[in-house]
Image (cartoon, rainbow, N blue to C red; front, top):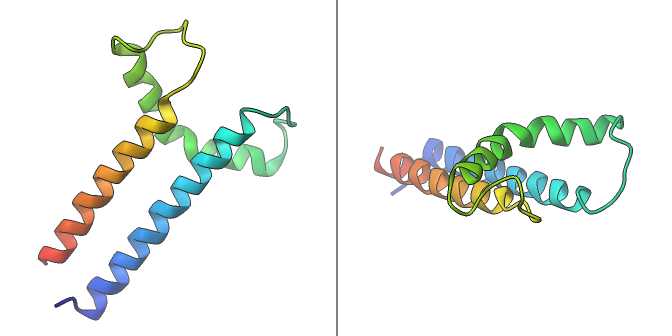
Length: 97
């Protein structure tokens, strides 16, 4: 049985990760269109997602799939998968408390 605090914490975790997924999706869409990089909201989205996408991009470049010659950036997919794993671990820990 979940306590009120656990339920609140789980809700906050769900909202946090949903926000990250939405920001990553927006960043994917922004990569397809030409937009002013000096825009405040664009800079904010890049600042919020780069700490997640940067390490995922570095992982891909070190792997056999990666490299600078790739036409598509698969780092958002890797980042979302890793975020899902982290979310599942956090939820499991909170439910055990």
